[in-house]
Length: 375
Image (cartoon, rainbow, N blue to C red; front, side, top):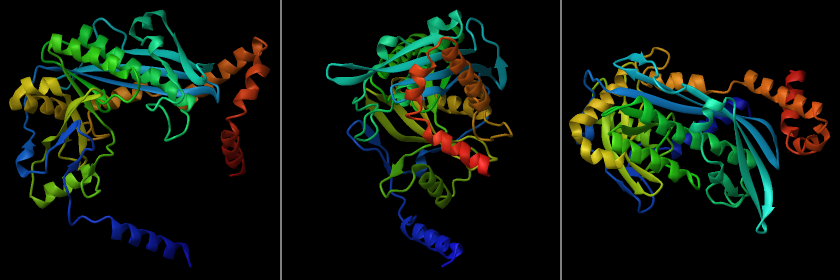
């Protein structure tokens, strides 16, 4: 049997089991969500609305520089920008980007393995924008960080510092750079995933309500489903086509409401540019939606659409493209940090203390290097 024959069978199998006859409805498990059935009435056209609202975008990035089963050193960045009517607004009070190292190490206490994290800002001026290290101590069997039934991977736990820093940094962006009716857009959902994370989201929400700044989140990807097992975004797009929704730009509201302690949001779907068919998941802090009214939601989504016309990725906000680019840790940067850290270990005469632990984890990277050499 040829490879082409095998691939034909693979695609035939996929086609047989991924049907579209019954799209189902949005599916959100658990009692903390109220999902709404698909309805033509929930589609709203995004119209051109000139808004004076400022819109801030926040994103973060991190990479492990040196790691072993019992420690992980990562470099982390968080970046923000502000736009108003398609024009960038220069920051007034804050650094646009903060950078810090997170050092996570294992400890044995209370008959269990714990992971504790220390934080080292690259500049002293970044110190005030970082999370409290007391919130970055986790049991390795904490369900919020475990991988299935397996003990948490220390490199994942080390990366949590970056996520907490995004919330903490967003709080300062709201406090120093935004005013009444302005909007902050975080990369990702508003759902908190890790122990202690809700402490930071609640501080953001409380300050935002006090200043009347709208808290939102937009995701690059979406893993939600319908009640027939289809992808939610794919089913929504099919539903729109089946019902002749021909708006060049639209948003679908509401998909669902989340009202748990770790997720307080109203969920929308947005198609933000006529040049693309891409749909994204967009969330607004639930307590604020009640007070906004549909006209203000129209204006918020229109502001997001106005920022989503960049030719490199039409339909995705340029503010998030820019934030991702400035927060991303590139491989050449990571290698420079790695060589500098390993060189420092060697100069201090402690290389042998750590290399035995590093080699317990880096065999996969060594095999990748061999493959590159042989190719």
